[in-house]
Image (cartoon, rainbow, N blue to C red; front, top):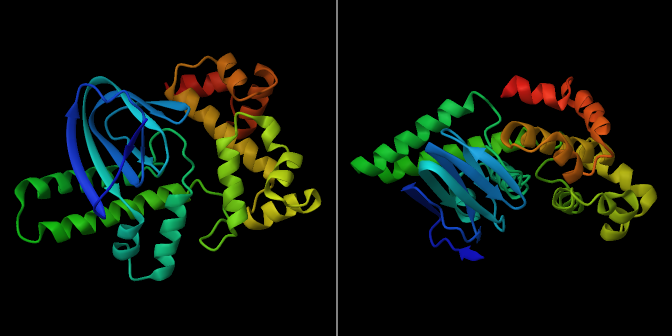
Length: 279
């Protein structure tokens, strides 16, 4: 496994590649990767995502990732650290803290980070403008690039915030943030997500655990776990060739009927219908 370091508040790189280093990498910084053109597969942690032009990926520190290039791909890399967010995001301290929280607690799911449709053409325009500024190198280009980078990071934070539990804020208690991360990391091991296991792991009494989680997130613990699993199912239906029974086994549903019932509550249709509709 290869470790990447960052020596400036932010770095920009544009690369055209017909292959990607096979050794999985982790970073000590945040990395946004935009697909200017090309197709292939993104691997992050234990997941995969079929990428195409216009996708934007966020890699948080310690995410394990690599790419498999199918057609020659132009990658736009934007690497930044917390120092950049703290010193360039805004003079509004509360906003900076909120952005730091959102970025640190990204869900580590595979796939395009852009969930807000109106942001997709905006991101494409900003990245194209950065590439042009770097190419032309006219007066004030560094200042303009810095401002556009800040805007991109803010848009990314907005898209992540759309997927976080509704009551999560920058001052939310640290234990529940650790709990969310733990749930996401152990979603494939249901025995670790039982209330008894969580109570023991986080040293919170079993009788208080559910009330604490709901007061901090606005959702019940079981609802959060169920919805997180449904989002993983949705990702696999949209962006993988996994069969329904493979998804059942991976995410520990009792059987296909169990998955069908759960997904119908989530999306109003069976998984096979959902995949066909969006194929």
